[in-house]
Length: 176
Image (cartoon, rainbow, N blue to C red; front, side, top):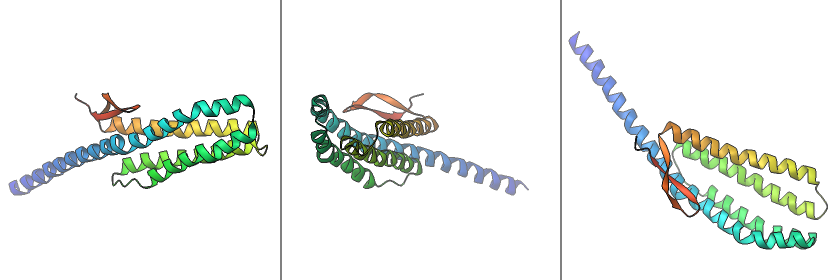
């Protein structure tokens, strides 16, 4: 009886130790994905859009819908397509990081559709009402990304650091 109890205790302790190690490895994978992939891609996108915003606002102010449509088609849409390609090329094994990437990819694909609809709007083939709907849905998709990230960060005891990479704060294991 004593041998069986000892064996069960040994198995239980082994399982607990392995699961703790797995959780630490998962946390490391999530940190690596977020800090090395997600931040890099989103910095790229933000930097590109920050460069384009003044020109796009100027075109909108002029009221030249043909020129604005061409700008969306030739300047903005290629950036979103590049972001989508970057997200599609991310290789990650961690289930939570994969889901983060999948949610971001879903949002970016809808952003691509939205900007194509903006182009159509300038050409008179899409309504302002439908654009407002697209924007609400896009905001919701981006919120889904952030909400899921926050849920995962909490589960793995990860916090935002004081350090940044470009425009975004990195995450790290909580020091608690």
